[in-house]
Image (cartoon, rainbow, N blue to C red):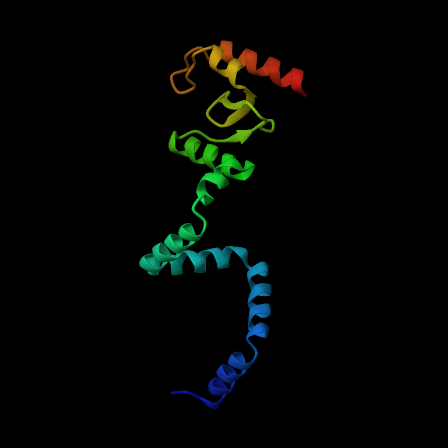
Length: 146
């Protein structure tokens, strides 16, 4: 049953779409967790629509994913996702730089060090192989850098 109030509200929203947008934007800023949850639920309910939206976007921006991976945020996201996949944490102790490679000193913490130095000693944090040697080099680099 539609009440007069609902009819009025719908007409008002149609006549003044900018006011609804402002109100929703304020709500989104005030409730980021709820916003993410609602968006996630909507995306899960409409997978075919989300796929078509993504396809259209990628047609308009063919190099988007490649360009995003080149940005510092894209690189960080890739590092974190790889670390998660390997069941390792990713808590950086210093900032990445050009030519750096992230080195896990333990299961959680990472030191960004020059790629050549990182590759100079074969090691594995999971199998605890050569970790004392590579970590001593990593700590030397970190103290020299700071």
